[in-house]
Image (tube, rainbow, N blue to C red; front, side, top):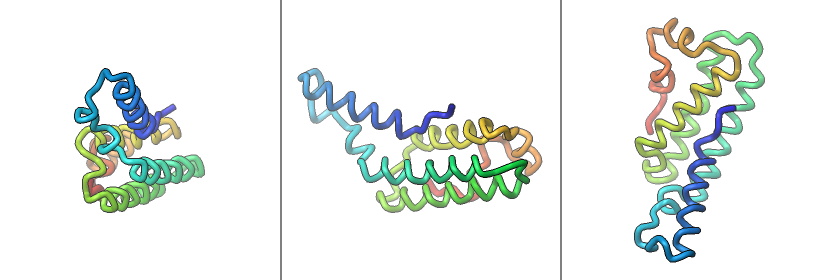
Length: 133
């Protein structure tokens, strides 16, 4: 099952907090809580929950239906990013989010490579039309 990127981000925050509490990490070097504020994590999880539910609701979907689910998720992630000063998702976070979207589509039984190819895209470009992060 595709693991939400927020799971890893929360683990990073918790690990840094643990290391700071143990005195093994200087608080000045702890950046995860700033990089992944709880409001961003909650907003992202809300979007990804809806994305998962929308995918699960599809039955023998058309390409347009799949792209509509992706579009809704990407536009909602754009809003989360905007709410966090256009800095919620840096390069690594963008890659994790796109990988999650791709993996989730595959797990829904959709051949993401074929889907993308039918539209002149690669699997890594399926979010590009709407993505601002």
